[in-house]
Image 1: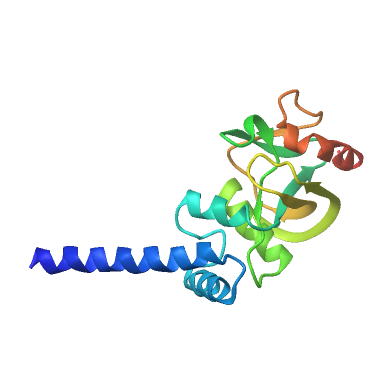
Image 2 (image 1 turned 60 degrees about the vertical axis):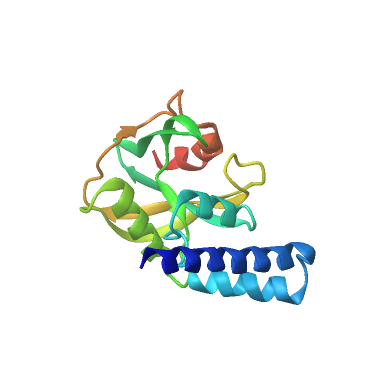
Length: 183
């Protein structure tokens, strides 16, 4: 019984190689476009695309929209999270993530806040305070909006800052002047 399964895998691989070969022969042709569109329709919405390699490869083919959240409390400052990853390095950062298709801005803020700051956070409103274009981002070209968020609850996993930390990731240095008036 295992033999037919192996043969099926071989024939699937041969079919995939044929499709990829056709796409490579004419990457801007109608067949390549139809095949690519067919594959995209099968994938779940970003950021739930399986596997980081697929997500990064897909995002490098377009300009993604990123939102970063500024949660500020009087006399406490802005809430930042520690970061340590291969793309942006080590240091403090504003919580953030990619926009999801067909969602309201506040809904995306809520999803990101719950994922990064804990289940007890509820975003009430979000106001755009800064726009950044990052064509040379270490991961992929993105445009990023810094959002001043009105919220309820107590964030987790980070720390409140009244002054810019010396080890804020370079990607977020330009945000500090935009939030300074609210501190």
